[in-house]
Image 1: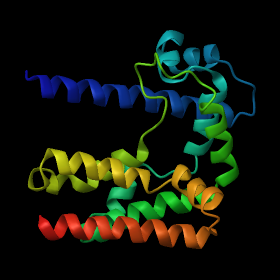
Image 2: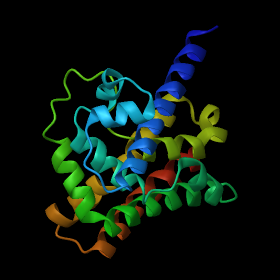
Image 3: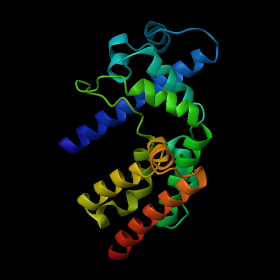
Image 4: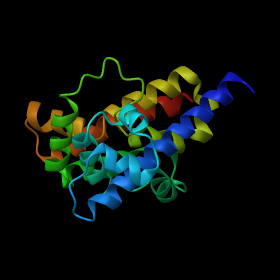
Length: 201
């Protein structure tokens, strides 16, 4: 088996483990009880040490699980965009995540405040769910070879940075924009990048 296949397999398994932890936590939260990592470990049949690699404390886990309730799956986002031209497809994803951030802004800000207190220097696993990057990767699968690895990777990174709560906070708190102005500016930026890339491609 190639190294690429091994890495893809590990990545898929990590995503499944992360998803199981979040789904279990959501079920427990809906029971209205206070939780510990041990409670989640017992209910999910995943060791506390494994959960700790993904979520270093119960506050981060509960905060992300709470937000996850409002977030569509990567697959459902893809289903809504699969028949769109590629630029419209990416802009749809951006608009979805920007609306999600705006509609749940207090919860996202709270989540960020908890996350930013964490020391991530020694973390092997990502503490964040990476839903934006996963959605973009799925949308761009047919174009990956055509774009080439450098352009593809840069596009994923830049597009991710132009959507979600971090981008909305920068527009509102730093640039003093309204929600609609923020969405319009972010869409303008991403659209120009996409037109430049796909015109060349």
